Length: 434
Image (cartoon, rainbow, N blue to C red; front, side, top):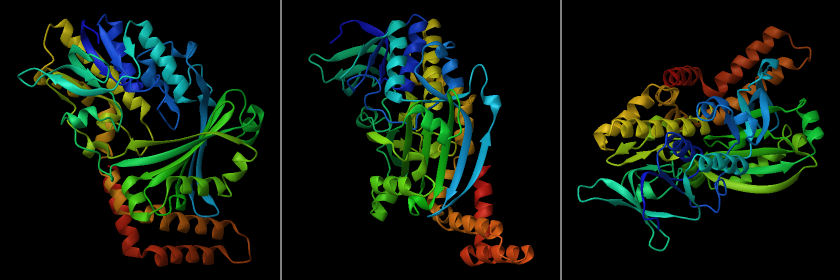
């Protein structure tokens, strides 16, 4: 395929792969990048939030030409039952800053742009190329890849796997185990198009301001999962996802959940009159810290979704992916300048650097949350119903005195979840959240 030997081969052209390739190429390393899709971003689906800090550390002036939709000034958190929701809501004009903190994006456009920067830095990109196996020397060290191209081998000092959550290279090579259905979510998303002024009117926005809505509750029919709504310039991204093993046990379908979410009385008016032009599905790694595979070995490093780098509690993924990719690239550059080989012992530097970042600190902090949510399904059914019923009791003015309403709400919680159940859930949540 390519006879030259490279300093590094990067498998995948998503956020993590692009971050790694760009970081190394900007420091003068010779990098080959391989992408299965027709073009970078062609097979990606994301909730479409870009966290600026992670990209700013890689491309400080990215705002000058990156395809950004809206900067987020408002975050809504909805706990929903079948007809209503209880919401938390934070909106601040401080987010209308010179360099905004978060943006909504459309991944197909953003990945193309990021890949363009990567190629400008000097990376050789080959699309529609599938890596079929890792090549090893007699001592077992990874020295390159074999692809599905004719004569398709390529060699490098190190291979960085940014192949995504369901990439097969790492699994086939025994570097990471097969995905477990209880540690990965299946999410579906639609893009609904509306005139820009309609979106701004419905979400109370001006200019390029944007809103993010994260939703949980009975919309997932008792399964572990969440829904989301993001505002773009002339479209709305709406989606929902649940743990795969829950879909298998319940028999529910992802598109069935999404249709019900769209019909919810709180959501339907936001989409009224829109035209749906895109439907997509994607797996999201949600096992967290306890599901992470080994991250490095002789001649290889894992970055992004392939390493389970997703913070499911805060719905963060792209920033973790870009950070791990950047740090992997910086580690390779550091070894190269010291003229040291990419052995397992030397690549332990990758994990040491990761440990000092928010990535590992956050994932370790929430390491018990995925198991807590999976084992306590009342979080997605009983509590949303109790909360919305309590809100309705409290806000309805019907001649009942307020002390009686307080007793009614308290009794409803005791009937719905019992006092030992309430105390136990609070204790387990607090323990998991530490």
